[in-house]
Image (cartoon, rainbow, N blue to C red):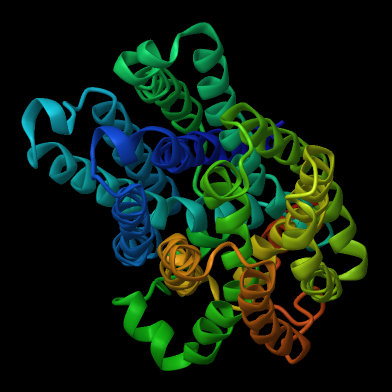
Length: 447
């Protein structure tokens, strides 16, 4: 029951954080380009809107430093409570913002500020949610436990896109653009109260408590992690670059790419995204479970190779028909990328010792996220200049994937070689030894 509560707490907050974060990505392609960044040139509007989308990614390393420090010094739980408030509050306020037509430049300025707060909060959320799960698990189930908070990505995105799809179907175009788009953002307030209530009932992770009790916490985690684990920070950045660019395209930019450059309707694009994310909900825990038997590294390498082989065929085939579009979205995002992502939390966290794990895991991952977050700006510029060339887009994806694949081949198999100390197992063993010692003492005293 205790483990179920921990997993639920890690998943609940993760769902809310990603719901809010990707809600912005969906709204960028559908709403913000018109209401907050109007221009006589649609390409310019899209470019500026996605610059603010990328700003959220750029802010994530800042959040990883702030909340990573807190998580390694004060505790995982305290850090995660604050990330929820930051993300939920900023999303709710986005739903209340005036538009450019109402207040001019103040509207996009406020939107960018709230987007930065979102990025800072998410920069601390992901790593903490992963550690809440993995540091409460024994070695034999760590991969499965680490995959559970990753479910927050597809569930959050499904909730976000479904809410937009539902509201879009119930309103006219004019109503949707006037007030309908605000409702999913305002709904964040309800979800955030629920997540805080769930997380308030959990304890600190066993590994953090043991480090704190033994006085082994790092004074300045970021300094210590760069002193002793710098190689692994850069390893994480390189490992994440390849699938990260593809992920941002498949989960965010695809709405613009499919509607603006291919000619599909908004409903078709949203449906393709929704069914592929629904598939991820099945793929992620299954792959996490199997990673405890065959290892994170093998799955990671297999996923990168498959994604690399499908990179150009994906861009060639999705314009042919909506059937190909749906099918390839499900395969690439719902199965292949989901398999890679299912292992990342556990794989990356196993590279760092407990006293700097929150900082090291979060900072490396979020630096990579900051880089790939500006992918939409690059793709918009290229499409404007050269058109939506499948070989140009596919070639860019392949370049990033090759970097990640090379690093994955030379990474340790963390299922075997890990920085995790089997805290739960040690506690159980110590309890058994204590019980034995008490029995021996009682026997001796009776004699």
